[in-house]
Amino acid sequence: MTFGLDPAAMAAGYRLEVHDSLGSTSTQALERARDGETGPLWVVAREQTGGRGRRGKGWSWVAGNHAASLLWPVPFGLAPDRVATLGFVAGIAVERALRRACGPVTGRGCPDFRLKWPNDVLLGGAKLVGILLERETLPGSGAVVTIGIGINVTGAPEGLPYAATSLAQAGCIVDAPGLFRLLTGTWVEVERLWDEGRGFSHIRDAWLASAAGLGGPVSVQAGGRSVTGTFETIDEGGRLVVRLPEGDRLAVSAGEVHFGSAATAA
Image (cartoon, rainbow, N blue to C red; front, side, top):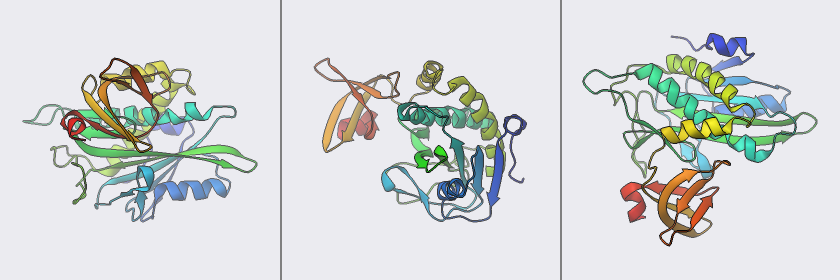
């Protein structure tokens, strides 16, 4: 199957650029923006040799996996904290695309897709999807954001410091082009629900319905500080709300997060 857009994405004005090989789809999208591209534009690579994760970490490539980035124009006046909540939009859009692609797997039931704060999707507790947002202000043309989405379709990289899995390991038979086409459609429906941040309460509810670790132990490392408590919710700004042992609530904007037994061991 070749890469293409869902009809809803085409009707909404999204365009597509496909490459055989790129260092990073997000880097390519930003370069296109610096050259005057306004978006919304999806940039896809059949092979990605220099993918990036959060906090400068690399994203290892396995042939047949999914690598795509959306170049999205930031509406004038939209506050950076609202733009940041697009990570939750992306998470929900990816989860919906995954559920539509996989459905119940014969002999295994429905795959256990979960959203991990802030920008990952898990399958059976192991990392399946990484999502990276990058915002840049361009002289004379406003701001853009790139939303990079890497999905382990055919295989998971080895030697990682955390558990990782792939759709193939879960028995889900889908290829990257088919999954991408679904994703471009679910992105449109979830982004409309988000409505430039005005509908974030709906996004928040949908995200919490599939949240990993909700109500359980959580450990957050940020700024040289470690906080351990209970993952209570996310607030209206998308911050992780931790109930501390003494009963106080702490809202965390960024940090390295561990849930469950990993939280108690952290």
